[in-house]
Length: 74
Image (cartoon, rainbow, N blue to C red; front, side, top):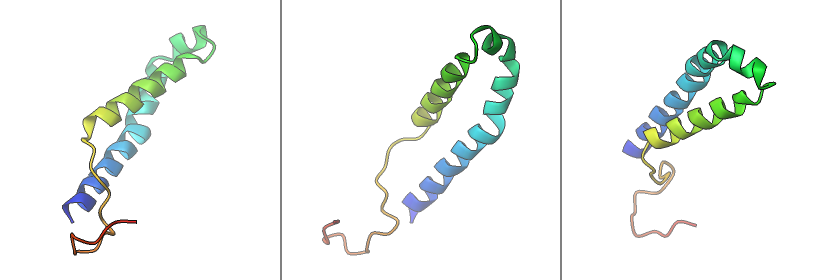
């Protein structure tokens, strides 16, 4: 069940970044975005994608796995 909790925490981090941090960054970098004809949005998306990806360590999604550890996953 700990993996499910970690997955929910990652979901909350992604939601927080998309709902709060990204709009603030877009607003703050609006002059640069206008000068680059909108291409700076790709830089913002890449940086946020990298930040969310490095903030969470990878784990396997085992929420639906049976409790028997000897059962192979298919």
